[in-house]
Image (tube, rainbow, N blue to C red; front, side, top):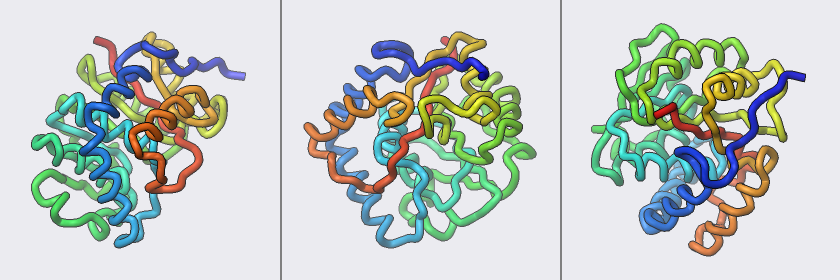
Length: 240
């Protein structure tokens, strides 16, 4: 079996449990509002969410805390992750989201109030697109193949500036990714560069998942917005 790196232990790197807890506490009021807005959006539009609550909230909180001016989203689908990112930029009062997808469903599901001034959508294959320079946050949730992972690790991740925050979805549906999967390619890339990562996946790192679930409960955010059951996203920062 291919050897892969393990999730980062508490207290390491850009995404540590302690840091995320501090973000939850600092932005609790705005996050409660964003959760309610997302719950209402889910009623109004056929979003088919792919992100579970904890990973969507960590993404929102990272954008709030790190305040990137430029955010890249590869894979918008129906716009669930897009709407979370746009709310974070709105609440920061600054920033542009550049989204890329081979389908344009998100154009029909996202409210104008979120997209009018902060969203740039490119319909097509991201591999042929001109990406904006120096993003501060990157979300990758698109073609889940080893080949696509080899493309984005070399064509995108290798060229990010130090200290860029990155989130990649669908890595930890189990304790470890399958050996020849997208997740395995990503984790080998992280390991080769000595970059730790964090997941709140209940399968990949149940201790982190349970710890953050307890924090959410104490902050009165236990009720589900979207009832996903995986939280498979991996979070990391590029080397400083």
